[in-house]
Length: 430
Image (tube, rainbow, N blue to C red; front, top):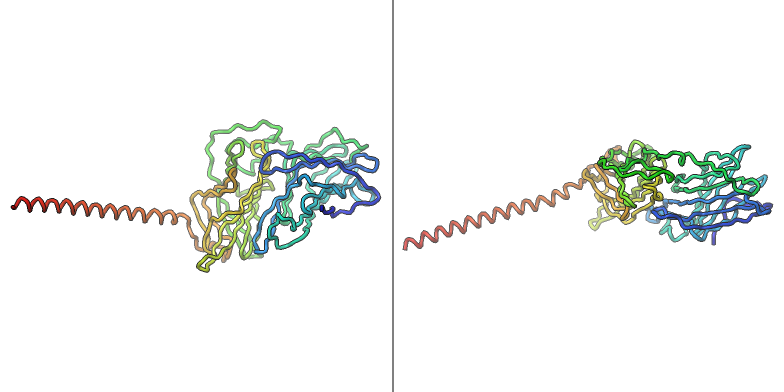
């Protein structure tokens, strides 16, 4: 049973809403388009909206680990609580979906403009998708909308994907068509396009692509160039728990995205922000670039049979907000990793290129990697366990064994040759 929106519904002005659902486009960010037509008692439209949305939620489990869940409105969306507003309550657009999740936004206006005001999102960790959640029940976050003022009697349109990050939740919106305070019950024929869609070329500070810069959907797709892919810049990242550094990471990152055409994306550490969390048995490093890219690395601690503790990379989640080759934005993850494994209290280092498999269509290449997510002392890396000696130590015994084998073979050959000469010489004496 769907929960009602946390915003009150005015009893003096009930409304009816038409809710239409259509399957979204292909890609990692598959979702459903939600279309809502809010009407007053006279059956006149006061709010019209059609948009795509998705939520990425990080939650803690009973074992003090952190996991990520993606929620998307599906075909069981309802719209209780949506209202045209009155003198005491602002117009409200509200939907409910899944097992007790709800989202709403209210609107304000001036003499010339209108805009979204406050967004409220409630997710219910009793939903089965929140496996082994430590906290059970509805959790609500409230945040100011980032929408800029829009001229009254115009329809706000924005194909570009926008995001809002608050607490452990990332909210994503794209393909938005919206008009609040509709006049005379008729949706306007005049558009107000968002600034992100007005640019023919998307910002290139998010990544350095092997193709031409990413374009918006209204521009022709770039053609692939033969320019060689440069090695990504090496970034130094850290997290603090109070005044104490609790996580250190040094690495160059390159994403390999294989959708219609393979694309390599170098992550620029100069424009990358660092957030995350530290714990005794779980830690998460989040790298984001101007809210256009998110990469979450989740580390965990395990006990070995020798009663020693080791840490390893357990999970990676990636969201690319800027589209690639005209495709939908990308959202993918792998929560079943077991790499970058070393003793707790040490750091893991690998200067050679490594590949982290996220999905069949998405991999991460790392360069000059060094990581320590636990027990950092004096803001410095502890002694490192290098991935290279593992290979060298494997090759050395083979080389030594081959050399010893060759030496034994030479000794045997020399012995048989010498023995044969002595045998021949003895035969001639008789």
